Length: 444
Ligand code: DLL
Image (tube, rainbow, N blue to C red):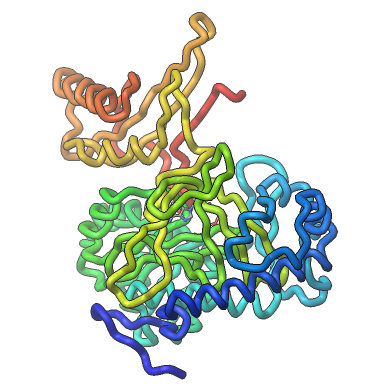
């Protein structure tokens, strides 16, 4: 094994792959891409039909740039081929299956061979190392275990770096805090909203979260903002790292933040990223915001070609100072399908959260309810915002002042009129996994 490379102060897990020179990386990616197209063309009828329809044969892939000739794969394709339609190996080669329930209909399935499992553990080993994790750490893993990839993905990565893992799964907040205290956990992993909730519960139980000795945390699986990072870091006295992945593309471990905490390094030797214009499908240059598309260049079980993630970001054009040469994607801006269009104005729920954190007296717990008036047929949006326990007052005048201030901030920052309803501290339902922020009644 190579000697570990230290830049900043944190160890890079796999310098041979993560710090490869760009030319060598492109050569590797091209060889893997070519092999992938051969494999799916010959083993998956769905892909053969798709490539034939696009007029592309495996032999046409002569450079990495030829990836743009390949057709996209979408979530609907995954649903249409449920459960085994995208298998590129005999079923007996599959050692594990995960799936995401999604909010509607048929689940999307990911099936892994042993090699896929190794790649997954590798991606998560790099992720945890990016957050400073080593064999000396105690990782308390509060992502849900089961079909969701957060729990087991983190588990495999923590095992790979040789850390001690506490597989507590999500929920059971009191026990989480007790184990943190008793076992002296040093890293914890969960959704960002659960991290904030846990801190709130700790304080309620008379425990100062900063006294628990956690050093850092890997948070992802849902949108969060830079301000929310600050809140989490302050509440726990830790460094909070953004991590990214999705069930269809193996799970968490696709991209992760390093000590620089600006953008997430994509494990590009395993998952090849592109950014496209979501309307035209054209590939966009680095620095330009669009939809992230990923090709699983080493995946054996259920490989995906140019999978449209619907996640919006851009590739950061500059190379990172940490020593890794892998490209970074910017913190996610939202999803193409999260986008709320309220009276013609585009709003991502994350923008609301961002604006709220800057307002004194409210917590970043909110719910937005959108409906359409039966009389005017216009969209109407109501924003429920939790008042901070210390600011909550029986004085109608004070509350009214706060309410109109929030409405004014939303109007100036988002350009929409939202009716704000202040609700009591802790009255919005907390989540132990992904937080639900939007109820859109217009589709019902
Ligand atoms: O959420 C995998 C995961 C587990 C990622 C643990 C990170 C940590 P899914 O349930 O399939 O898989 O949801 C994937 O969640 O397409 C994004 O829209 C969103 N998402 C994931 N990570 C982030 C992040 C897991 N860091 C979907 N920031 C993705 C914003 C994220 N959104």
